[in-house]
Amino acid sequence: MAFDPLTGAPAAADGYPQLGSVHKNGDRRFGIAGARSQVLADRGTPMLSSLYHSTVTEHVGLVRVGDELRVEWNGTHWWASSPAGAVGRLSWSKGLRTDATHVREGRSPYDFNSGTLLVQSVTVDREGAVVDCGGYVVPDGHDPSEWSTSTPNESGRELRITLDAAAPGEAAGAEPPAPRSFLRRLLGRDR
Image (cartoon, rainbow, N blue to C red; front, side, top):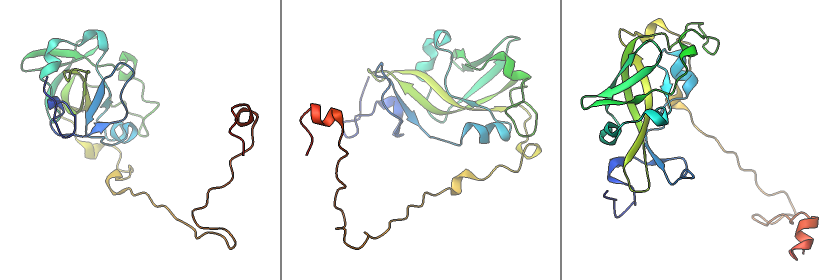
């Protein structure tokens, strides 16, 4: 697999940033962070964080951020497929189809038979091959306006940090004294 010489990102990342840290097995996730799962569920478009590992096929290697995969309910599970063939089983529990306790409007966003998975992230292994994907599903015939409109628009969120000037008598930027602890004394790091 090819890697970008400037960023070290695999070619399969298609220029998208890494999301989160490197997994224990060396896998890395790239793509678009997107809205929170509760926001997606409230608008009737449930989030998929990953495919069920043991069901992933070789066709996942062709999936890229921005792809649209077909999702079908087979009576027991949801499956995602691309034009090349089955990609894998969605990791949702079949109990979610009727359980709406986690949704504000009381309707389960998982109660659908077919839809489209909008891929927002891909997970690549150490060699740079795609091994998993995630995103959110838009059920066929779904109209988000029929669902909750009380959900805040997350795109306008901002982080505000307030910095106070140093108190009189304190030097700005001075480090507070390290706490005295048994471990620090034991390691010889006590001042």
